[in-house]
Length: 321
Image (cartoon, rainbow, N blue to C red; front, side, top):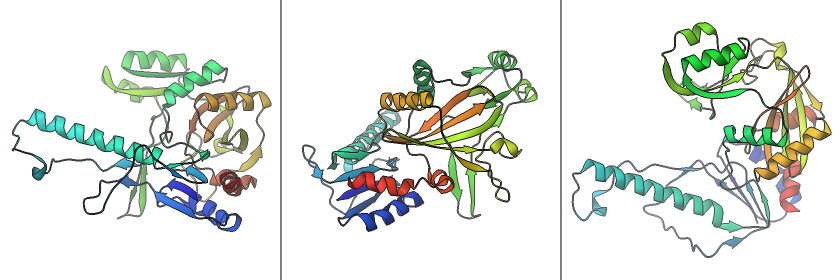
């Protein structure tokens, strides 16, 4: 059996499963991980000391979060509790318990020698990754975390007025009523914006704005690096953040080969992060390759589509080897 942890709407999973239906005669079990909720009417049972043996596990998108407990059911309490602090601590404890059960369920229900991705590696701390990349010798952009207007102005001047703000975690919300999507993007920061800030504000992540020739999206799969160049700087709409897609005039995308030294450094980085797959973003300037981030569960469909890498098939083959 091949077990796939993913999301209900993930098209990438659908395509890989299509390939598995052609290449593999065994069972494929898809587990959608959008939410985890303790069942109240169905039986739930896991023997913590045992796991079910399977051929392979693909943690495509295992970022399942438990539905939070917001109230303690009265039938679980021996007596009514009126102390708000105690109730808050009880709810915090109950939610931590569900988080731990969820993590155990993801990591231990099945076991296999052939595993792609990881149950608890669906996201990384991008600030720490930048530091690890720098220690390996990979070039990274000047980056700061600050809540100080004065420090931000100093950094703005250090970057010669070329500055962006960038969230660690991307917010993406589909609005069903209007058939639209709300998303956060990287933005260029102007001095007029900084001047209107209070002396202290919520801590923000700021980076130098790179003068790019093109962007590179690489997909890492068990030691192999598949790269694509995107000429996003040719369009004003996508020049700061290529995810602001211009549907009427999409960015040109071509097959790309990174320098062998950089590919070796990427392999070192992924090994240090204990990742055997992931999507990597790099900017090519006039004289630099600058690493931006790695996403363990990032999309790669547009890379394989533009470059004919057949990555969906390669993943299917990896799972059944």
